[in-house]
Length: 243
Image (tube, rainbow, N blue to C red; front, side, top):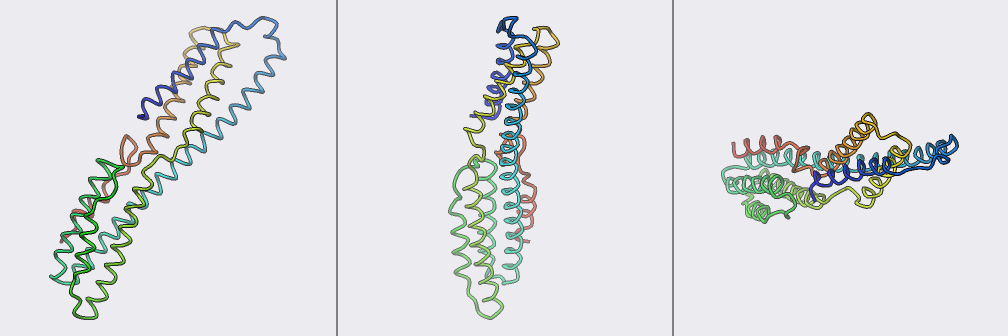
């Protein structure tokens, strides 16, 4: 389900709860100061728990986003280093450099176009091309060993990005926090008079909550949507390969 649709559902729940609160006719003997104090204390407790859970959701999405962004930057740095190492190896490494470029292009397509697909086998062809390099002296043997280690590390990081492509947002937590926010909206409407000012205030509140959930869900999809990781590092390293 898309973040926009989920946010629309959240808006409907919260604002619908406010309208339900307006529609409820609370008897006058339930509108005394003691009843209001109980309601305020209850809603304050729910609001505190909702704020804590919202903070947890934001932290989870932000942590996942930052981790994948850092992994992508590390991959780009290792790719650039690997390409320069193969350039110093000599002409025999040109096929391996060509395979490296194909691997990076394939990764670019998978991350930003298909996102959740597993890594292609282009990386295996690149590793095989390194393994076939003829090491004729100590320098070439050292470069070949380092290139092999870098290639293994790149493959591991790519699979790690794929493994982290799933959602970091807990669905039960999201459902619970939306339920609490809906309860809060109902309580706001119970003792408020259904005038234009109150309705507009609760409408803005519902829109704000839906926008917050939308941003959290967007951040949970780092390679698609509005808040996606920039592809500039990968484009930059792709433009430098083979030079």
